[in-house]
Image 1 (cartoon, each protein chain N blue to C red):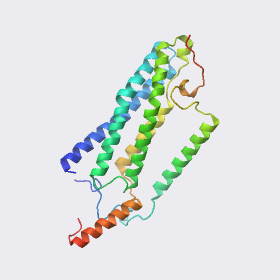
Image 2: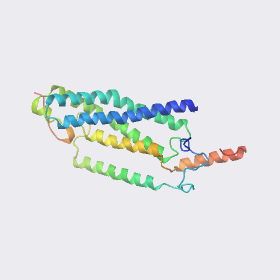
Image 3: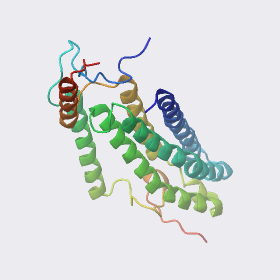
Image 4: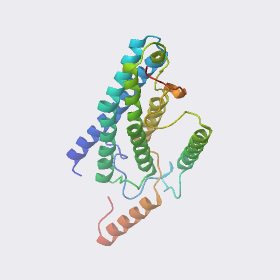
Length: 72
Length: 176
């Protein structure tokens, strides 16, 4: 049995469970965008606050621990 | 795209994408070993393993997943920007690949340090848990999107669909 959703129906049955087309942004997209926005804000705040340490190549200190590593 | 070619690309994409998840889990296992072990040899070996898996397995799988995903989207009616689940999958895959490629030089630096460090310095190195942990969650989100394909067309997709409908109607052919 072919999965009708393998290729979308060009007549436009990409809609709600009752078969009607979904206009505008679906709820799951709005929720996902809010989650992404919150995560981005948390990341920015963390960077400003110095959480996670220097975030770039050459960073030393596994798991975010700040250590100065010298090789004698 | 011809059905046989589409199936080949789909099979390739699934293999690469699921392989990426598996490789990330293997990387995480090494990271946990490096984090928890008090044995210098284990920490050194784990970091060497993470570097090898990262560069020679995970990066190629990530790039391959991204490229085959693009081919799948552009070669079928799903398109790249018409459906929200495709758009989200694309953006999350690009994000994951970029973060991975930017992070791997740090892993190489840490692996080099692990090769030369001894004693307390080596034991204090710890593991690399955050990146693979978060990466696996993101990959699983992409996987769920690709399996469930939640409904929702973008404005661009709805416009394209209307254009196609009008084209079919004006050509006098019944809609398929």
